[in-house]
Image (cartoon, rainbow, N blue to C red; front, top):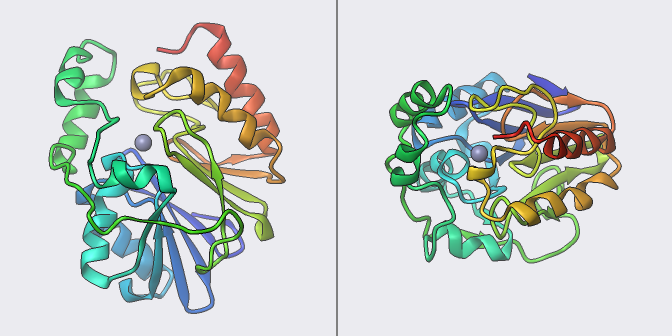
Length: 248
Ligand SMILES: [Zn+2]
């Protein structure tokens, strides 16, 4: 799905990834589970490019549904695997801020949980692996990769979560700092993920402050549909939903 000039959003297994086209080159943001590499390859081909044209892989955060296929893609084509400096240690699995199989099992009673769990297990959710090739990007301004995205620190969901803004086309990729839906949420529209997914609930709410002032009128979230409209509106709606008490 084209979301702006040269910006395309695709679905992996209950998770989104994004391609930016800059002439012949591509930047991939997030990647889906390990088993979603075929979906990434099909997405690249749909833009009449080859996997080798992916020149950089940016990751919002090191959860397996965002990082999984990226590790395999890096091994295949060598594109740098880039994250915010705080998140690199997470990607290398020096520590883990991710729902463990044990906590997943403890939450199986939740509506939709069993169907979702069986889908993500098929996509490789149990094959978590470290990403020794993960590197930190080395600037606070636009990155020197196709599209020149600007990282926006949004810690909370994980300690080193980063959103990416593409100022030239008014798009912000929010990863899991702000989503618009999830199989485990009954709410459709801008929202925070269910609490048990967030490493630090308080900081997840505060991270919305970093998003609301951005000049963007299109939000591409890690989960759920693209939101058209000012990012400030999406943030207001996510805050209202969080305050409503209806969030699992
Ligand atoms: Zn996610």
